[in-house]
Length: 322
Image (tube, rainbow, N blue to C red; front, side, top):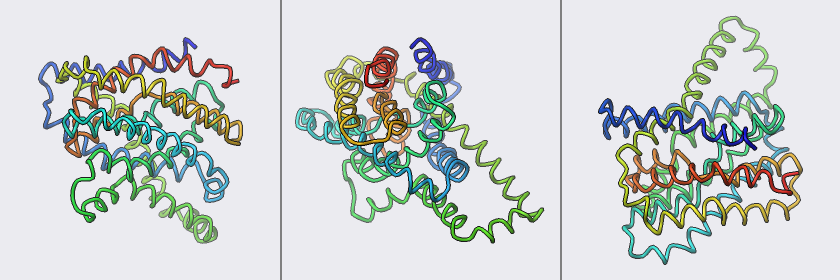
């Protein structure tokens, strides 16, 4: 499991770059928020669209439905655990309570699992991780945003939160796969044309380059936020609770369901990797964008990533992994 340790630790190296530039005064909080908006509206949607259209067909989307369903199940387990803990947070600021609930709901379901899958699974493992994120993304941009914002605003505001660039890119990717499935002749004719194939290749390369920026930019944003971290969050009871819940209680409940339900073996391995993950680095970006407690989000990302250097190797070395 030493390789797992170093794969996890690699994210801290990139996060330290963000920490260093913020401490030196090269960037400020305003820049961090603008970079967060760029990540949500450009880099992340590019990753979603390019991954869907490059790795899958309409048939594989339908035949492997247990992957996104299992990923959504893991997130909903976290939502239930967070909901059960909300009464204990009644003395906390509303933004902190919302951030706490959100950190129970969402984990690092894509970036770190992709790195681990490339080490522990075959070449299809990474593609399975990417496909499974559809379920997590649906949870994120529906119930997740509602939790993070505390259901603020009118129904129109809630609906506007759902119509986000990541959700639109997911729908667009599904639309492209649907078109390819039902109109293969037209698709082939377009691919045979020198001009159209060149344009398609150019756009694909552009989306791939933009999508590849998602992971390092997310890590830099987290590191920069940690440079201005309010240390009171690090030693609070809610922070201790989120570490235990995110790295022990929620993975245990998710693992139990994954082993009890009739998931295919390849799907089960992917879901076990996802279930063991720490808080999502993107939670800091989302807290910035949706005016939640970004300091609490950054502190929970830091601590859960530190402790996951121990817990992930233990979860993935457990007997049920074999």
